[in-house]
Image (tube, rainbow, N blue to C red; front, side, top):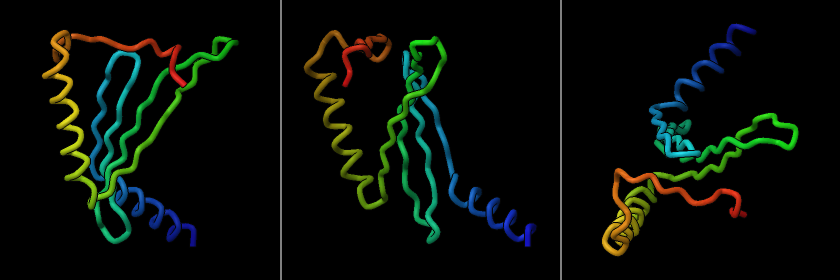
Length: 108
């Protein structure tokens, strides 16, 4: 029985995790993970992870996750490309090689 449970657990993990990419961006790391449903449809999770410190000095990671399903891929990509193009066109101080980060202490 235990062997069957281990097989199912390992099979489920390998089925779920299809592809991953991480992007370090200043104080943040973004994780793009392609996963598979039981019916073998792909979906994307985008996770933002920020290193934080508790008052006692210990470290923890604050994470925010977005789930994006296949029926929304095109509209999401179009919207993202549109706003990035708007920023590039209207904000001449922004360049792909410049690291500019907002102050995390003012975030909600």
